[in-house]
Amino acid sequence: MHSLVIDDEFVSLSKMVIMLEPLGHCDAATNGHQALSLFRQALEESRPYVLVTIDINMPDINGLMLLESLRLEEQKHVAPPAKKLIITADSSTLNVMLAVNKNCDGFLVKPVRQSVLIEKLTALKLIPGINNQSNSEKQTTNI
Image 1 (cartoon, rainbow, N blue to C red):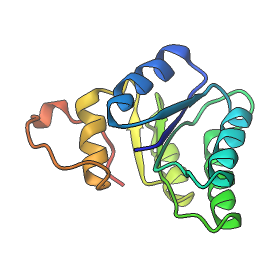
Image 2 (cartoon, helix red, strand yellow; image 1 turned 180 degrees about the horizontal axis):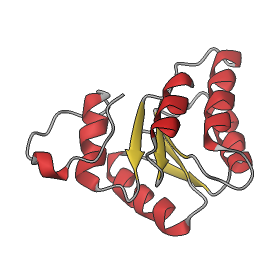
Image 3 (spheres, helix red, strand yellow; image 1 turned 120 degrees about the horizontal axis):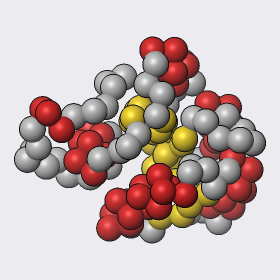
């Protein structure tokens, strides 16, 4: 699975890359402009991302605005849409609603645990199902 992780916090970025790398090649971007450049390059080289995780709060481009820009790039290149997960420490109802309105595919709350990420990726049909976690481990907001 070809993935792109976008987060301006080094620890969160590194942790997500470590969790996704066993599933396939994973690129990392520390800001929205870098992410948009990597995303465009992948589309132009006919190797689109299958999964993109996007931090909402970044200094240069808000994650929700970036989500919209990525969707426009996919339309422009007539590319299959990547699954896009919004990642944030702020799980307010407003953030969830804004993410839903921008057509994200999921919402995860920081710190993201591997079991929760696997659950979300399974639900999105990006990896085969694994049913070995308890309800107490769940932290996703279903959307």
